[in-house]
Image (cartoon, rainbow, N blue to C red; front, side, top):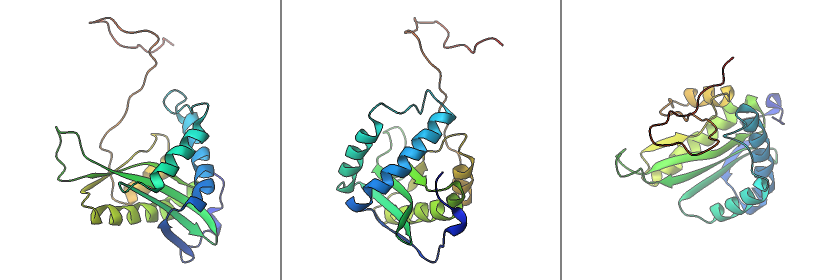
Amino acid sequence: MAGDAAAYDAGMAEIREATPADLESILRLAGLRRRQYAAFHPRLWRPAADAATAHRRLLKRALGDPQVIMLVSVDRGQVRGFMVARLVQSPAIYDPGGPTCFIDDFAVDDEGFWSSVGVELLRAAVVRAAARSATQVTVVAARMDAAKRQALREAGLSVGSEWWVASISRPLEPGEPGPQRPAG
């Protein structure tokens, strides 16, 4: 993305709760991640026309939500990464033993930061989530986001689900087969 992984100093970095003053940096990193993910899968990750405005509103609400853990990693005055975790209940048909720490918004300033900043943010979120009785963590990662996926593996996570995506040009009739791959 935009940072310089070689310049990151874990000894100088601070993981802390995000504040309103961090929103512009968080939005910048989130915008970079949206563009990256849109390139990975243009249908699933296509940004809305007002994505930045909508995300700003969402993050402002999240700052005051007791069910949200929003963290930043700051190194020498620069936000190097952020993550937003929401404590959610699992659907009634599953029982992981307590709430889930669900992490969707999660980005770092440089792909080289995933194994440091990313893992540190994740570990800090897990500690806070466990203190609120969460029993598992679920993190969204694009299939092609190799650096993030590797960092998640290094942090002890494993793939528990995948999303399969296809365009639908019209409603399917009962019994009609789903989308087909184009020939060739």
